[in-house]
Length: 369
Image 1 (tube, rainbow, N blue to C red):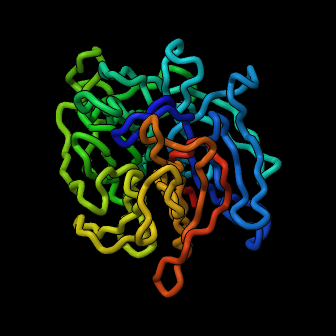
Image 2 (cartoon, rainbow, N blue to C red; image 1 turned 90 degrees about the horizontal axis):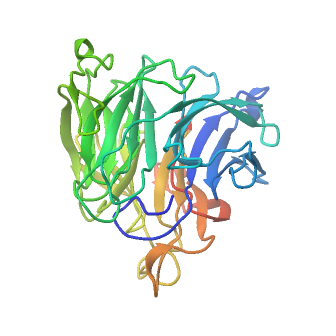
């Protein structure tokens, strides 16, 4: 990843974080495993001390058998260990897309992943290189993804796409739902298959897309139009502005459900994770920089959160990009990213704990129970 996801220019390395509840032996061992991309590698972290780490997928430049990984990770909800992640090895030839992987192993140190498919859409004309980012599975196994589109300037060209299983192989059918999202970000799909999609620029806010969605890439399935690239485009979608950008969330980057019937929205630029109810009304800030701190040569002490994920106990994990202000502009400091967790006591968020630091541009999050 060479630019940002929140409407300001910088150079960076793609990253991602996801949380996977691992079926490892007895109940005391059933701890989440955190996955993060750092320097285009997929890393796995234990989520309790001593925070062991393992490289699960090495970047292609270091290993000809590796893959370049970026964006949000989404595991299939069937417990198979199969997951989707942005994968842009060798772009533009082949084009960037989404890798479909099979995870093997039960513990950090024993994990491996094999790519079993590649999902490749067409992209809108953009000033930025194609950047696959968000993902979310529907209850019936269909998949939603976003790609960022224009990132720092230009019209909104981010896309929301629905994909139709199976996802094995390199020819997976799809239908585009939206081709005009401003700097599209993370996706959360609720239990009614409503999709909440973050947008950080131009159309800044959180969109909610409601079913029904197309059932195929044909007119008979609700996908009878074509976009400018000749790709299938939905006849109609139900989209509303669920949350409009505001001082709490000026550049929405990712969305995740809380454990108390509400939503969290991250915003990198102001270092805030805000909580909203399901009417889109603001409740409170879960994370914000300490009073008196401003973004400067040193990043916020609490980080600049992009990807967010919540486990079944309500713990909130976030990927901190380590954004700072320098003579060359605003962007991540060298190896300034981190991965952190916020725990709650009597419903009150506690100070974040750092699980890993010195990361290069970790940017996405996801959870599988």
